[in-house]
Length: 151
Image (cartoon, rainbow, N blue to C red):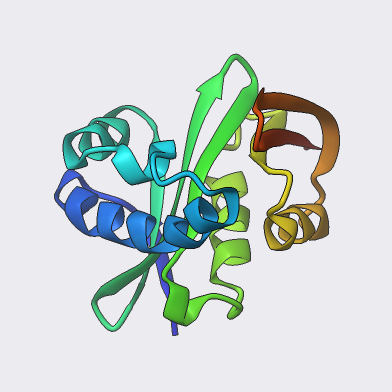
């Protein structure tokens, strides 16, 4: 059983650990060990918890996933949807994203992005009502796929 609740500043270190574990495969996929989620600090995570919406999924007292959102006008910018590797494929990511939709009722749209090689991420987002808006080549090895879900 997984509970999804608002993250607290004291959760920053554990959320960062989950984030790093989840993004290692992305870094390997793109051949880039310096992607943002892997070089972020616990203080940066703590700061986001204080200024945005950060949800955590816990199971047996362990944080097993997290997601962030921040309103920009009427659009919620979604980021850092992560699930620990040993719990991926159990619906935790979808549950976190759905809970974020509910946690930001003022949003009229939700925007996020993923890498072009991250097919599993793209399938999850589409299943939850996201549609591709555009692609942005940011490096030779990376094109970001931008997606939006209108409310």
